[in-house]
Length: 455
Ligand code: GDP
Ligand code: IMO
Ligand code: MG
Image (cartoon, rainbow, N blue to C red; front, top):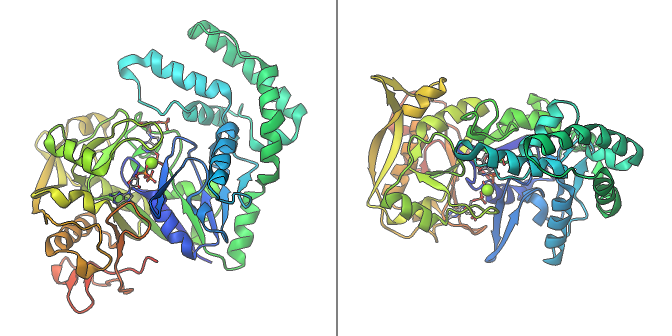
C-alpha cells in the first residue's frame, strides 16, 4: 500500500513539520528516515508550538506509530529529553519506536563537531554542532555504535574502547583537549538512557513492511532538504545524510515501488542557515522584511536565516532529484506586504544561461539570477481557507511557481497554524503536456494549476 515522502526542496525549514502533521490525519505510521536533532520541525496547534527534533511530527495523533528509522542518528540524551518535554505537555510518546540499526551520536561526536567548526574559523560550514557529521562519518567508517548496542553492555563497551582510543588522540593532539572517559560514557549510555530507550527499540524495517502489507498508509518525513543533501546539495555546505526522496528508501528500508507520492515542500521565498552559495540571497530591506515577517530564526539554534527570492532553478532540480509528484508552497502569507515579487527563473554566468544548477560548484558560486517580476497582493491571506479566498495576484504567483518548476501545487500555507492552509480541491492531474496557460486557471474547477487532492 502507498507510501508518501515529504521532502524539503530548498535549504531546510520549509515547513515539513507542519505538512507532516497535516498529512498524518490519514496515516498509520510516520517514519523519520535521516538526519538527527539538527532538525527543528515546528507544529502549531491552537496557538501552542511544538518544536520537534528527533520525534516524528506524527506524534500528536494518538493512532499513529511514530518511527525513528535506521537512517537517523540518535543522541539518546536528546531523545529522552524531547520525550519528557512532550509528555509534560500531555503528548503520549509510548508508541514511539526507534530502529535498532540507527546509529548513536556519542559525546565525542558533538565535541568534535564543535571543535572542528572552531578550527575551520572563517571556512566553517556553520553546522548545528550537534555531532551529526562526525556520527555519520563513523557510520561510514564502520566504527559507529548503534542503538541495538545499548542492549548488549559487553559489546557496547568493547566497541567504545576501540573507537575512543582514536577519538582521544584526535582530541589531545589536534584540539589540545582532555581525553573522554570510557567509564563515564558507558555509565551514561548504559544506565538511565538505556533503561528509557530499551522499550522503544524495534525492528523498524519489519514494522514498516508489516504495516504496508496490512494496507496502512505510511509517511516518510524528511529532515533538512534537497540542497543540503550530501550528494546533491551544495557540497561541502551540506549535511551528512541524504534528505532526498531516495534517502527514504535507505533510511527506512523500503523499495521504490512502495512510494506513491513525493511531496516537495517549498517556501514561497527561500532561506538558508549556515554558510554556502545562495544565488538569490537578499541583503536589502526586502530580505529584512522576509526575516521579520517570516520569523526566520532557527527553530532550535536561534540563528538568523539568510533570506532570498524564490529560486525556481533549484526547485526545478528538486523535482528531478526527488520525482516530486506535487509541491506544497508554504509561508505565502509572508509575502502579503510586498508590492512586487521576484522569482529566479534561470541563472547566468560567463554569458551562459542555466535552467538547472550548474554541476560545477565554482560556477554556482558566481551565477547571477535572472528574475521575473510579479505583482504582490497587499492583502492579509492568513484567514484564507479556499482558493476563492486568494486574490488573483496570489493565484498568479502560485501558477507562475508551478509553471516555472514544472510541478503541480497541491497545497499552500498561509500561516503557522495547523488550520492555516489552502488546499486545491480538484483531484484530476492534467495529462496535457503543452505549456498552454489555459490549463492552469480553470474557473470551472477553481483550480490553479493541475489540481491534486492533498489531504
Ligand atoms: P521544517 O524544519 O521544514 O519543519 O520548518 P521549521 O519548523 O523549521 O520552520 C518553518 C517555520 O514556519 C515554523 O516556525 C512554522 O511554524 C512556520 N510556518 C510553517 N508554515 C507556515 C506558513 O504557511 N505561514 C507562516 N507564516 N509560517 C509557517
Ligand atoms: P530542518 O529539518 C536548515 C544546515 C546547518 C549547516 C548544514 C550542516 O529543520 O529543515 P549539520 O549540523 O547538519 O552538519 O549542518 O546544514 N542544517 C539545516 N538548515 N534546516 C535544517 O533542518 C538543518 N539541518 C542542518 O545550518 O548549514
Ligand atoms: Mg526546521
